[in-house]
Length: 166
Image (cartoon, rainbow, N blue to C red; front, top):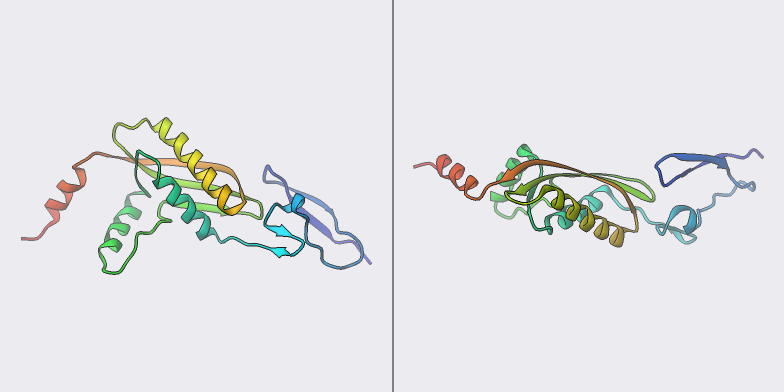
């Protein structure tokens, strides 16, 4: 019987090739090899949407975050929220790449005016890492933040007043 190569994800994101144990039977990795989501009793898979929702909620909890998402995403979100029965899209402005043991997260942020963006990004990263790792067991390898806008109080009120119909 020939040995089939296996691939294991390393913490840096690369893979290492090895040989599968002979015997031909499929084997689940131990928790040391694949983390807490793969055990001898089975595998737990977490959808990208679950991780992006956790990251979105935890990022919004940080003081100084006005909203998440770029201009177009926020505009579509504002229209969606006006529809009766609709809910806020908690994943707006968040994209994730989920592996078996690790996750990389990208977040688009609108900061409140006057807030230190350096402190804000530190707070967002800390809050998101704690929430995602605690709830999913996945290791957060990176969080890339993109500050797309600064919210100035009263700015939205003026825009809404201009667009109203008499």
